[in-house]
Amino acid sequence: MTETDIKSLPKILYIEDTDDSRLLVRRLLSRDYVFLEASNPIDGINLALDTEPDLILLDINLPDLSGREVATRLKKSLPNTPMVALTADITGTAREKALVAGCVGFMTKPIDIDTFRDEIEAYLNGKREVLEKPEHHLKAYHQELVEHLEKKVHELTKMADHNKFLDQQNKHVIADMQRHQRLLQAAATVGHNITSILDLDELLQTTVDIICKEYEFYYAGIFLLDSEKKWAVLKAGYGEAGDKMVANDHRLALDGESMIGGAIRKGEGEISADVGDEEKHFKNPYLPNTRSEMALPLRAKGDKLGALTVQSEKVNAFSTADISALQGMADQLAVAIRNAHLLKDLEAANQELLRTKTFEAIATATGEAIHWVGNKAAPIPGSAERVREDLLNFFAIFKTLLYLPPEERDSHPYAAVANEAFSLLPDLDIDLATNIEALNKLPADNLPLIVDIESTLEDLGIVKQSAETILNIKEDLIGPGRISKADAFDIPLLFSTTIAGMGLPKGVVTSSYPDDLPQVWADKRQIGRVLINLIKNAWEALGKADHAKIHVSARPADEAGYIRVEIRDNGPGIPPEILEKIWVSFFTTKGEQGGTGLGLSACMEIITQSGGRIWAKSKVGEGAAFIILLPTEKE
Image 1 (tube, one colour):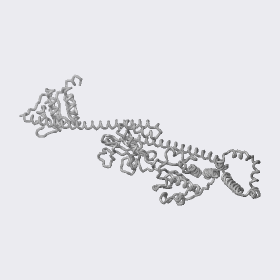
Image 2: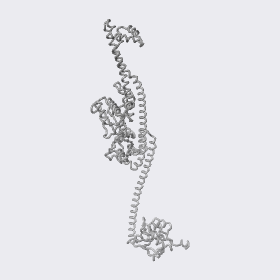
Image 3: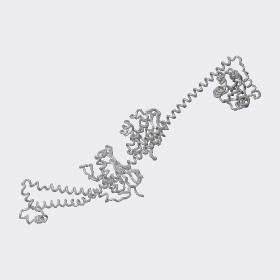
Image 4: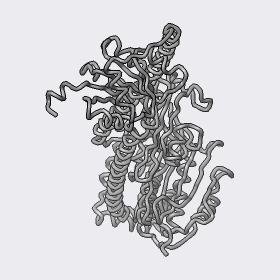
């Protein structure tokens, strides 16, 4: 068949959504006609308008648009093209509806292959079916169109609403993703800015400031656990509210119901979507606008350091996704805090080492000097006492000779002693004639002032007392190093014997310690001397008042192999400017009330030689505490 022959063949379009039906019709018609096909009504309409076929076959039950609706649509555009319904719908009004919709014929399925081609040819040659009283059926068809249109409008509306809902959800997802990205970027900024800060106070305050500015939060605060891990103490807070709370020592109990306590205990972030709906939430007067809060634990290598709180003025400002985004930043902050702690501890250790070595050097130099002075002062008390005795003996001799009659004076034994003494004076390069001449020139009334026996004896007493003080200082400095015999002993037993032996009022000194406390390895006598010195100092600092309380305690130290002993009082405390000077030899705050200023330096010397450490902590108005680390008995 030539191309001209093909072009002269009639074109038949079959709109059918079932593949098998199209295949059957194609086999029956494609040999004698130009066969066109479409699987859906929209493609069928477009193909009909493009090709203007000679005959259109329509399935009635098509998706989206029925075959009748397709016929109605094409009848206006292709008024001269006959359309025939080819359907399995054999309901009572199916034929009538198809005809009023614009079809010129109605064929049923299944197709009769023996007559099908003849019927097609008849329709091509002008066959038309006529419908009697089309008005009645036309009204029913229009009603069907209206109902179908309403159904489509409802479906489209529902689809539009669903699409709108999906669009909103997509916007939320995109907004959440963008917010999550901003949080991650802000976290990176915070981490970058804090990694170079090694000062702890600067680190904490800088962090809360950066967090609030980068994340645009209402408030941020950092809580750190206290040494006893019972309280989370606010160390830095954003803005004026944060400054006031830090100044007021704002803290939350670790075992309480706060979000901070919960986050630290569980090691997980917590969120409060609306704090106004939670009765247990702390109503902070400094932060009245807080509506939602998130608490993130600060953890580093398994250690719980504290927690970070971030707060917003909006309800539902935080999500679980925010926890994952910000926890990395919180972990990075915890590492920075830990590094700052380590640096601070290292600096403190260096300062302690420098202080200890300085005090040791001072004590050594002072000890050597006082040892030399002590050796020179040792003879002074005895010499002063002998001078006093000799002076009194001379007075006794002169008084006796003064009151003897002249005839008995020269023969008295005391005269021989006096003459013997005077005869030795030239050998000692002493010329009494000069003194006698000077005395003769004085008025008689001035002579009693020249010879003052009371003043002479007082001066001898001062010389003796001063020399004895020098010798006592020598013993305080050199004694701790000279007397040392380490052995194992029970510190609680030393507590009881020392406290009982001091004779202080009942109830002033109390003690506490666990039953299974290991034994201490040191010189028991020297450690007892340290306890006496520290308790005595505390008692004197308390002014021996009725409310005075001194507590002595012992427990295993955090440092392995040591016992921690603490002597704490409720006195006035030690000012910071004095706290570091108390260990220096001869430094004393007692003024003229006594004390050589060697007690604490001797304590340090004893504890250092025992292989331990001693230091003091104090707040003015809250008392003072002296802490001692003593080595435990070696196994």
